[in-house]
Length: 181
Image 1 (cartoon, rainbow, N blue to C red):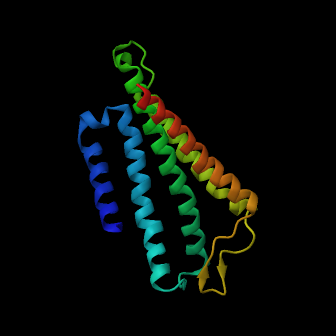
Image 2: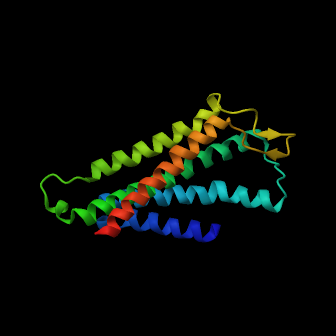
Image 3: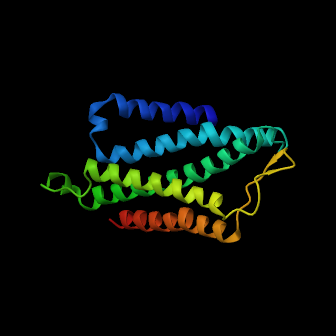
């Protein structure tokens, strides 16, 4: 899965970067954001996940890499989900208002898409740093041979709600509205 994720997302990034017509489409900003996030997830998160499983949860990389790994996970997963939400909303606007692209002032411009992508990445970075600002119970490395991410219950609930359940609900509403058309 990791090899397919890396190869597929590299191809998506390369296609968008190397093809001018793909670079000039606002919707592809969201696709590019999703591909970058998924690529980083495959490289930084999934590789350590597989290693953890194969080594029966032994962690030999130290506390700095453990903190980096858990923080990267907290950045990449919400970024992927929020990029999917942006793609969903963009598709919704394209289907429900197909003549928008012919208007003088379109709803989704490249500038607006770039701003949305920047905001969702900044949001994910800030939200991922909250555990380092006190919403963590103790060090992630326990006995120097395990990397366990320990946050407060409040942070875990807030993270799940804002970064999974709310976007999931909004996407379900969007796709239900598309289905009704």
